[in-house]
Amino acid sequence: MLLLLRHGWVVAACLFALAFPPVATWLGQDFYIGVASRVLIWALLASSLNLLVGMGGMVSMGHAAFFGIGAYVVGIVAMDAPQWSGMPIALPLAMLITGALALAIGAICLRTRGVYFIMITLAFAQMLFYIFISLKSYGGDDGMQLAERSPLGGFDMSNDTVFYYLVLAILALSLLILARLRDSRFGRVLLGIKDNEARMASLGYATYRFKLTTFVIAGALGGLAGALMANQNGFISPNMLHWDQSGTTLVMIILGGLGSLWGGLAGATIFIVLEESLSAATPHWQIALGLILLGVVFFAPKGIAGLFARKPR
Amino acid sequence: MTWILILEQCLNSLQFGLMLFLLVAGLTLIFGIMDLINLAHGSLYMIGAYLVATFAKASDSFLLAVLLGLAATAVIGMVIEALVLRGLYKRDHLSQVLATFGLILIANETTRAIWGVQPLSLNVPQALSGSVELLPGLHYSAFRLAIIVVGLAVAALLYFVVVRTRVGMLVRAGASNRKMATAMGTNIKWLFTAVFGAGAALCALAGAMLGPLLVVQVGMGENILILAFVTVVIGGIGSMRGAFIGALLVGVVDTFGRAFVPTLLRTGLSPSLADAAGPSLAAIAIYLLMVIVLFWKPQGLFPAGS
Image 1 (cartoon, rainbow over the protein chains, first blue to last red):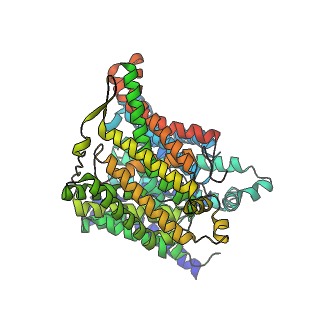
Image 2 (image 1 turned 90 degrees about the vertical axis):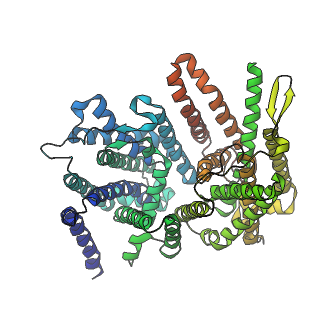
Image 3 (image 1 turned 180 degrees about the vertical axis):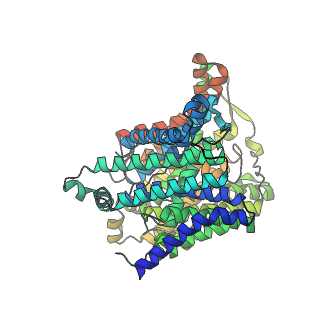
């Protein structure tokens, strides 16, 4: 029964996501299709961070590095190598570059743990932030404008509904991969490392390699989210690399539920819906949001997803 | 001429480093003793600066305003500790991050609701508005000099309290081994409220002294918060000595980076490119410093309890 209830929620969420654009168009609220695409992209970013934090126990405050670089790859390719600017090349390229970046950053950061890991990941993201502020040839402080969305075959990418379904498909595929990863041997080892790294090391697992691999996968998925966000907004700003973004993403997954497959999606949706609805209701909406966050910490310690998963399996 | 410039930047480094130390001293102890990541530490700095600016306007006396502001911020800090933070000590770091992020939002918006969106002005006190000739040809702002004197005095006082008094001994014991200190009969709960109040007062002092040099505005807390955390990590969590040395190190790197990197770049690059890259490279220098320190010493320069 509980299992059915859980799957019931999933089915309802999928139907809602699939039906959203036609219903929004029918209601004459086309504007919200763009908002929904943004929610889904945030959900992808949050899910990638949730792999790192919730499953791997590596609390990173520098995930914005991959988000921002993924976006800049799209912008720079469109500017310097327009023949490669199509989605089938630009998106994998963004993942490849952010994955390589994650390999380099992770190799250094994973020497430390705990709070020191939080701060050193933050440091790398902030360094990239300042580098892109000073790169005048790529817009510097002002950011870059994209002339058009990256083309994909015969699809009309400038149509928000078409783009929404592309983002939805990519998010669904990513969640599927994350679910498979969680249930694989790799995922079990990772959970073991999060629980007790010394124990896993003494069992003979090369814990550093498992953690570094996770860091790279999370980085590449974060880069994919950034590449999609660049396309959604048609604009890339160095602020995508700022620690504000890392902090917001972290808040989303704590809100949604750490380590839960749906935590990223739930957190991103709730955060953005709260932000939109509270800011429409009162100019001092941040007080309400702050109180809600405090309420979650004290009354829903496992996040929103934790409220639905009643019993540990 | 260049020597005077370098000397002046040394004084600026010292001035900035000491103010950073005021913020970091409380942060590192709270971190070390209660294992609490308090993102709202920067909010106390902002609240302190706003209160001092308001009191200064009402009373026309900078000194009186600073004393009132310090006391009021200490009380606010202790109230926040008793109402919210006390419930977070036993929780994991991520819950603490979420809750104190919530506190930042509340503090910023409440400040905006009370004082409005316009930045507040806090003027340099009349008596210190001039400059002093320290050496022939070296004129230095009297107010900045006063900041250095106050910073050194507070650092000395803190050193005395932490190293020479009974309360300080308890604080050190709590920072290096919390469980053992509790087992030996230390009332950690009372101790922490006191440390938190003192930390809040130090934040207000830094806000009051930096207020006339920077701008008193919403968001000022977050800008300096990251720098304060960088300093805590460079120095080693829970270590007062580490906080002091780390703060001075960050002060030197930041000040010299801002003052000299653009000039150095101009010798190799075109002026416009150098002007664009200079300030960013100076900002990067601090983070680079942290990465280098953590690469060699993953626990910071002076790990507490060593």
